[in-house]
Image (cartoon, rainbow, N blue to C red):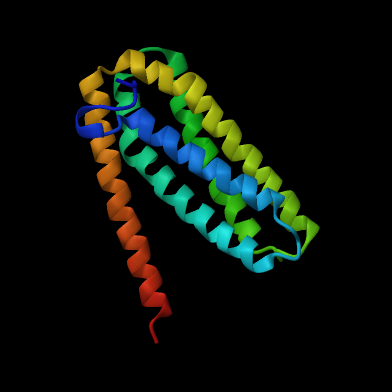
Length: 171
């Protein structure tokens, strides 16, 4: 049985978060490769990236990070926790700037590259340092329980975001 799977095929917290990383990396890669002429596609991709990042960072900050902090034993564990939160904050600052930039410009492409680099650095640090540490500090059942909480929170946040979008579109 793969590490990330548990009863009924449910992913543990780390498997679910890594899946999010893979999805966002792919979206950012597509955005980075997009043409300056493909402004509508760039805008669609940016909206999807923003939605995915918002959901992902929210569930990490509200569920996974507090659980990690609670079991943190070493100063380095706390350092990983605080750095991760700050990296989310930096992405939260870069994203609105990118959204406010004309997608037909080289400036948009440059800001896209910076966002991609930030997200990839953050995801790699989590995957190479925080997640292996969490596997050592939390038992299998805790990670599965956290995975269930993260999955439920993702569904709830997605529904709320979609409801907001529908309300914005309705006359």
